[in-house]
Length: 220
Image 1: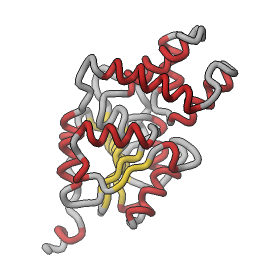
Image 2 (image 1 turned 45 degrees about the horizontal axis):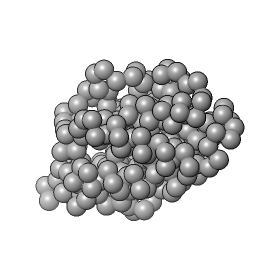
Image 3 (image 1 turned 120 degrees about the horizontal axis):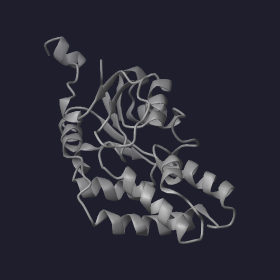
Image 4 (image 1 turned 180 degrees about the vertical axis):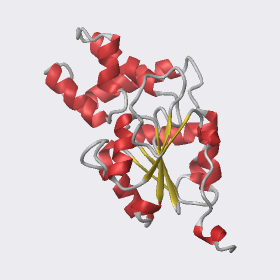
């Protein structure tokens, strides 16, 4: 039975993945890189920041001398885009808060720790998040399961007792490789992802119904 809940961030709690696609494309185009919208989508969607920069470094050598330099410019463009609309996925945020009142909750993302911390404050969920992990905290991005396994270890919960909420192919595969239950979010109008390995696919995480915990099942 579930004892801890792990949330992806971009595309699951915040409708920010598309903004990141546009921000990364903008950061490259302004440096003279002929990146199409389709190429930017393939580069960014569902991938960790480390993996994105590694591909940029290979495809466009020298355009950004360091991951930090590209991150700084991309984040500035992202903030500009974020001011144009409310990107909070309210039903997902409400679910996190409801679960966090009774269970350990973590955010496990491919974004930087700084961006995750800012996003937690933006969503107003600080009291409900036990810990968060960003791209600096684990060696390989999703679909590698390292991020979820680390979260489980830090929470002191076996992987099999964790439920992961994801929206991308890579995220779902990482969760399943970690031996965890995975609930995938497939929002209408978002780029299609292969979510076939997920245990459950929902159009809105507000429809998620957790199984009773061990104490509830025992009547305690």
